[in-house]
Length: 172
Image (cartoon, rainbow, N blue to C red):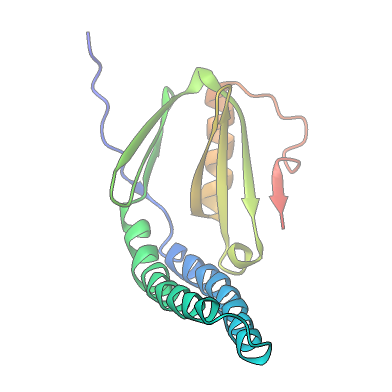
């Protein structure tokens, strides 16, 4: 009655950790600059003392968060992300603390598209988005040739008609 489905074995690119580190560094730097500007305003405009104390606490917590999301999280995510595509299913397996396994039947797939932002373009990576009626799912940081092959493979298995093969690729 039950079918046996093997665990997904394909991994995302090792450059994913680099891209996520750079992205997280940029985001955290912007927020820390904003906190620093607010601290300067607190001193210059003589705001209430509790505002300065709150900003120092937030800054400290944010620095701890930055250390985790820049140095630890990207490596862990890159090591735990798995996917597999066959004629019946797309399997995704990922998770930080709570591991998720997603099984997408090919007959439910409505569209497949690739995205590539500026950081991902620099490292030759794509993000593959698989859309179903209820939701969409993404496989991050796949090498360019693999992403284009997977896109065509999923479209073939799901019997998706694509009038313009370049149209689905979105660049930023």
